Image 1 (cartoon, helix red, strand yellow):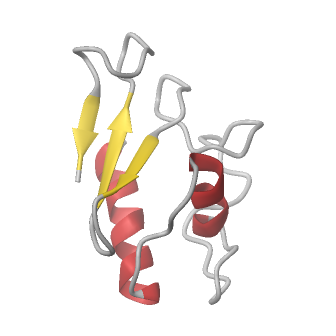
Image 2 (spheres, helix red, strand yellow):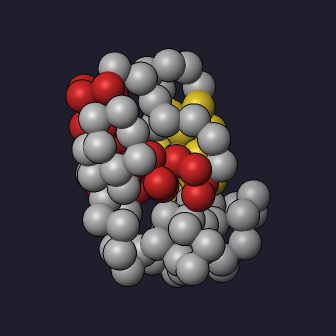
Amino acid sequence: DLRVVREVFAAYRSNLHENPVGTNAEITAVLAGRNRLQLALVPPDHPAINSRGELCDRWGQPFFFHQLSGTEMEIHSAGPDEVMWTGDDLVTK
């Protein structure tokens, strides 16, 4: 999951030359086409988007996105225990 999300961010940066910023829901909206190019890298009705508009991991928990720079995004998944900031969390840049 993290690899796929990382590739979506890379495609976004390749086309818009920046990272999206904001909350998970704001970033998900941008990835789903609310950007200046109207480029939808994630379908707005994708099953990984919850009812609050947040992109979620395979356990149904919203990802945590942390922008490290204009070109680098850290992506956190709560992992199998479904609790963020515990020892089984998954993280990628």
